[in-house]
Image 1 (cartoon, one colour):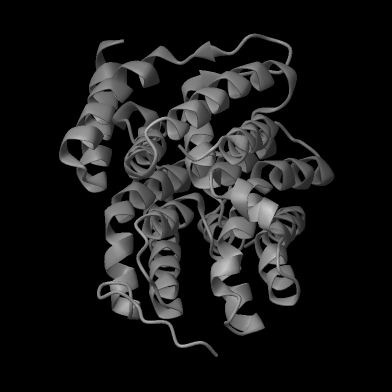
Image 2 (cartoon, helix red, strand yellow):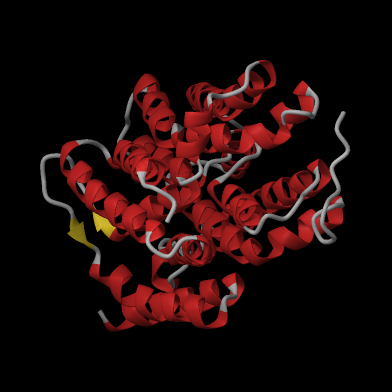
Amino acid sequence: MISKSILLILIGSALVTWIPRITPFILGKMVKFPKIVTRFLEYLPLSILFALLLETVFNAKAGHLAIPKWDIVIALVPTVITAVWLKDLMKTVVVGIVAMALVRLVM
Amino acid sequence: MKEIKTDPGYTTFRDGIKSCLPTVLGYLGIGFSFGIVGINSHLNLLEITLMSAIVYGGSSQFVMCGLLLANTSITGIVMTVFLVNLRHLLMSMTASPHFRDESLLKNISIGSLLTDESFAVFSTTVAQKKHFSLRWMEGLNVTAYITWIVATILGGLVGNFIANPEQFGLDFALTAMFAGLFITQFEWELTKNQKKPIYVVVSVGVSLYLMLFLVSSSLAVIISALVGCFVGGVMNDK
């Protein structure tokens, strides 16, 4: 049903994902983070969401200049317009998927 | 324990489910794609379901499929997953102070299910200065978790019939969701300060592009996010 090596990979990956996720919650119970850290982290949501968004746009390999994935760039145009205009995440995702399917049909 | 008054709509578990709903479609699209990709990477339904249940990290699961197909060693895969998911450390550091007064076990349960998307919904709620309860956060997290697993199974079931989910644009659900979540957060930050969010975003963009040349993309995300925090943190509130 499940091979031993896959099981090892799953357990190992689960642990290395879980530990960084929970450590701050455990530490946060014991110590209060310095004010300066909290002040900087206030900008984390904005920063990390933008970084994650941009990362999906680029074809990147260390040592080479990142190249935009043009199909994603094109599909992003109607997606962003929908997000700004309708302010509805669900509709944004639908428009995005349809736009991408159309772009791939043509390209 | 401190009694904090919560805003209506952010109190009960059911409120949490409601707050999660806008992201549900995104999770379904990405989880469904993952199920298909997993089956086509020679994993079985049990293995992909287990992966979604215990690793629970969207992009890292796609990376794992690619590495399995490339016959990467166990340590190689685990190390890569660690790097791809390390950004959660920053998100947990940002979210955890809001749950200080809750028990250790509750804190661990919130941290265990924190994702990019649930963190984004949480952060927008914080940016809107809404008061929320632990139950609300649990509703948000658990809904996302169940959706992710169900979507994985559904994708896994049709995985033998579809080789390439990309032709349906489903993989774009990830980008679209990040775009929508980012714009919501950006607009809220702009209402508080008209210049700072722009500087933060530009600094993240420039540093991400430079970092993609120097390091792996998962590290580039972490470093550029820290640059954004630094720019936001040192600028005066004007």
